[in-house]
Image 1 (tube, rainbow, N blue to C red):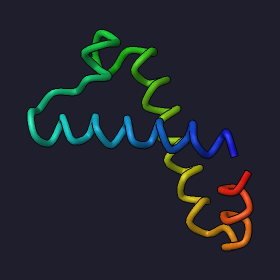
Image 2 (cartoon, one colour; image 1 turned 180 degrees about the vertical axis):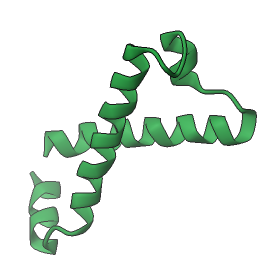
Image 3 (spheres, rainbow, N blue to C red; image 1 turned 180 degrees about the horizontal axis):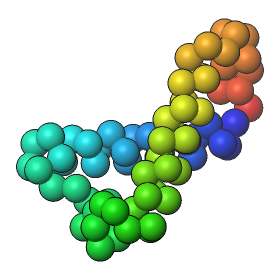
Length: 72
């Protein structure tokens, strides 16, 4: 499913951002948007968080659904 791939990409980007924060104390989203408290940063954080929640639903889908989608 196309939405699954978008959500997974956004969740990976969010994970990489958290990795940068943990390793280098550098928040890429805050850097790009002008600070972590700006409305743009909050929108980005919210979209990435929603994408992660969507990816969580992929863990609980029936196996046959995941198999069918990967063949398409």
